[in-house]
Amino acid sequence: MTLAEIPANAADPGVSATEIVLGMQLPETGAASPGYNKVDDAMRAYFDYVNSKGGIGGKKIRLEVKDDGYKAGLTISTAFHWKHRNSNTHCGNQGHQPSQDS
Image 1 (cartoon, rainbow, N blue to C red):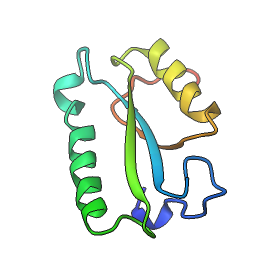
Image 2 (cartoon, rainbow, N blue to C red):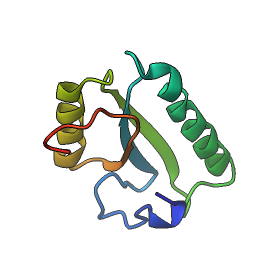
Image 3 (cartoon, rainbow, N blue to C red):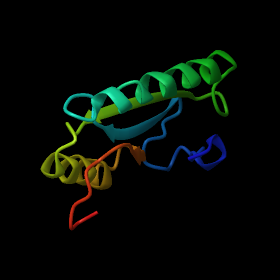
Image 4 (cartoon, helix red, strand yellow):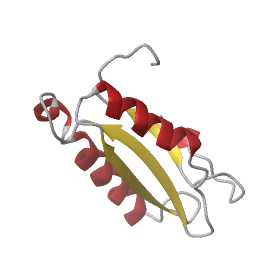
């Protein structure tokens, strides 16, 4: 997702008058965590930079992360969480195990 794809309209889920909330899932724990557990830190660092420049249209970016532990069942439930949560925009899955539902 590029910053140009982030919704800027306050009527969009995950967007308020002051912030844009993005959600993602990745294995912060478990077997794959050494390859992925810094992805959210890097994204936050970039968003901090964007926020220091005024954000997007004056809105600050905030990242919420769910740990799927690199377990298929958790991957499905965390993806379900982001898909069905109206207050958040899902910005991606990182390093999840494939499942029949993905």
